[in-house]
Image 1 (cartoon, chains in turn blue, yellow, red, cyan):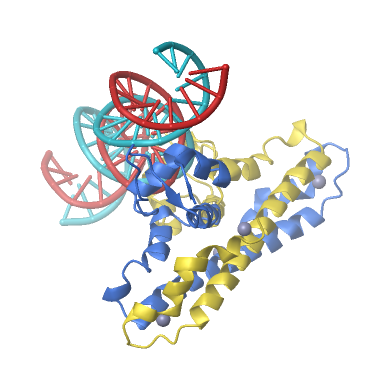
Image 2 (spheres, chains in turn blue, red, cyan, orange):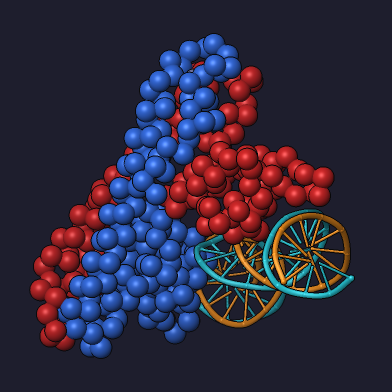
Length: 142
Length: 142
DNA sequence: ATTAACCCTTGAGTTAACTTTAGAGTCAAG
DNA sequence: CTTGACTCTAAAGTTAACTCAAGGGTTAAT
Ligand SMILES: [Zn+2]
Ligand SMILES: [Zn+2]
Ligand SMILES: [Zn+2]
Ligand SMILES: [Zn+2]
């Protein structure tokens, strides 16, 4: 019916101490405790933790994630408009990251494609030449 | 003909201390010094610094960036194949980040679209409901 | 010649996000 | 009923990536 911290840790591959840390930081709601003081996590904690870990792997800070997750806590204090605004701000952030990554991908891809990847010395490698002179081409738009 | 550190700092919006730090960390080649001990940066340092800053904003660690930039230093020690392999590993990393971000974007977009963004209390906001129960939908693929 | 704005180095301080340590209680198996 | 695997808290330690501070030369302008 519920998980002890070690179980949640295994299910999510998230270190036990990190789980307690996330609780301290307000990312995980404090779960009910048993008479022994143990944390007994409801099942959806697994999804919650995975969400945190994944958002993190996408470059969101814990503060970002807290904002995303805290929306639900502010419930009574906010309007639908407030909530939607936060969501859309996040969407814009994600979209910006995507387009910057794409831009960098294209630049690196182009540079990489020009090299034959042979076993010859890299002395005259086109990738190296590009990095030396042109690596910042991806920055053109700035 | 060359920039003093303060000029480079302004041109790149990169803190002076950070520039010296990048030099210590091997991300910026030590520039020639004047008789006064001042650093005199060649012009392409601007592009180099911007490349570092941008790669950073895309989630690359300084170690990642050092790898990207150091390719050019290893020149004689490596073959074209070695170089290309590093480039392609980076490409794969970027591609993975892009697809994960897209996935998260779609999930959040869907949740957000269901909310009308009205001035009514968020009590019954669909975004909140989704976050409560389903925020981790983006994780389905794991 | 003074002074404000630069530059130098070394070393310490900061923030985020953990991770480890220490000391102590709890539970399940043999 | 003891032993090993868990759990608890509070606090200190760690790593990456800066950032600041102290103390002292340099340069350009008034
Ligand atoms: Zn860019
Ligand atoms: Zn090559
Ligand atoms: Zn994913
Ligand atoms: Zn709503």
